[in-house]
Structures are given as structure tokens and as C-alpha cells.
Amino acid sequence: MNRHQAREIIIQLLYQMDINQESLEQNLNVLREEQPELDLSSGFLVELIQGVVENLEQIDHVITQNAVDWKIERMGKVDKSIIRLAVYEILYQDEIPVAVSINEAVELAKSFSDQQSSKFVNGVLGNIADALEDREED
Image (cartoon, one colour):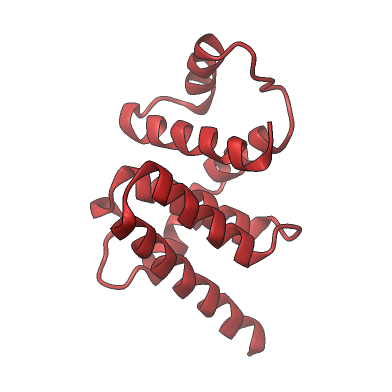
């Protein structure tokens, strides 16, 4: 499985968790049952999904601070899941360039949603990237 495919699965898991409000472990068990061929013991997919879940409060705070005129509760669940994953990558995955995280998020939005969503995701993540860059310059 390549990283893009892993991100697709992560988005689906985050979306599922947002809908059913179950734990990560319960949702991973469902995924194991549905797709037993996936190796969920370690690797990129597991590292990212655990990272997003463990840092969700900080991630949502960053999104809230940078989503102009949008409350996180009003965002579409798919868009929110995509943005959460990208923000985790931007904040905690130094080996992944910010531009790659944003580009992947936009492509995921195009795949899972529509053109408007991809523009929205790009705008929010662009604001976050700009804010982090400004903070680093200070």
C-alpha cells in the first residue's frame, strides 16, 4: 500500500469515528473485519491515524484558529477528516513537506467530495501553512 492509499483509508476511518463516536480500536476492528488483507500492526497508516486521534484537541484548535468564518462543528465530516489528517502531517510529520500534505489533502477532497470542497480544504490548509510560516519567522 502506498501513502496515498493509506491516506484514503485514514480519511475513511476518521469519518467513521466522527459518525459513530466509537474508539479508534473499535473502528480498527471493524476495518480488520472488512479488509483482513490490510496490515494494521504498524507502518505509515497506523502511525498517522494514532497521531491524529492522540492530538485531535490540538489539531482542532489549529483548524478553528485558521478556518476563517467557519466553525469546525459546521464543516462537512469528510472535509473535516481530510483537514485533520493534513494538519497532523503539517504539525507533527517533519519528513513530509507541507506542500505535499496540502496537495494530498486537495486530491483527497476531489476524490471524496467535490471541487468546492477541494477549494475549501486548500484555503484552510493554506491559512494554516501561512500562520505557521509567520510564527517561525518571528
